[in-house]
Length: 147
Image (cartoon, rainbow, N blue to C red; front, side, top):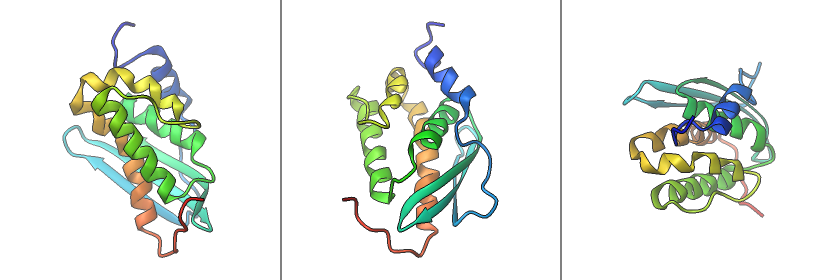
């Protein structure tokens, strides 16, 4: 498949669906919705000392959002809000300016490099991250800064 949006690696990530589902009793839940296309993402988090202990996502969205949620499901453990905000900034920069992928463990986001040419699809990649940030917004815990 030569379509820059739907490379084989991206389709594989979406199919793997790391973290798909819901947590039985999450500490916090966040939602994100893209009214332009109807994509919806719900993220459940268990937190300890402001860090993600467990994550699950229910992603009713396009392959781009599914693949992004799968990356988060695999790589967000032990991260805090500041880490997620930095990830969002790195992805925005990567997509807006054809910049480098985020640092490990999020370097898998390089698979979205072809999405840079389609600004209307950037929100699809960012939607799961927005849901995670919404979950952090739902907590009253004091989130410690990144070390």
